[in-house]
Image (cartoon, rainbow, N blue to C red; front, side, top):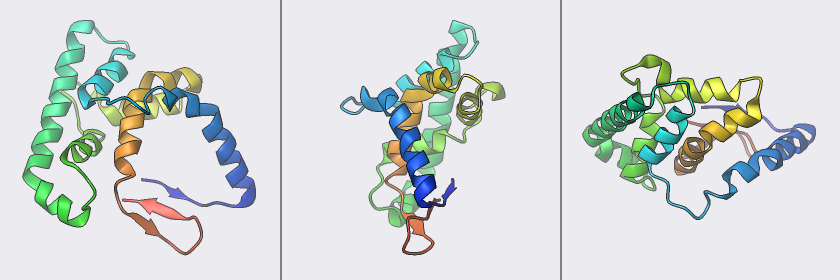
Length: 152
């Protein structure tokens, strides 16, 4: 997903950024958050009618589960540490919802690049937390012995 290159200066900047936003995720550390809960929270923060929120969330969860059901054995061979739930969460990121304006990756990216980034992150915090937690179970591709890596 992203290629990170670190120098000492960049590492200090990255740490400042992490420290600045870690409070957003602190409350989720000891909680079990479902994909449905995280998606509902994220989608409801968008300007959308309340009756459409569950429809969009259910559609994304259903599509993600279907994708993983058909491929989980192959995924498990490649990534032995991953659970089916984690695979579904990762798959949900790229799922198109019935309304393409409210697909997870579009909502995430919109909030991450918004002018009011702090409030944007608050809106997506639950989903971002479970997505990053699931991504940590994937193997890292190390470019060399430094702290450079690429998530696939």
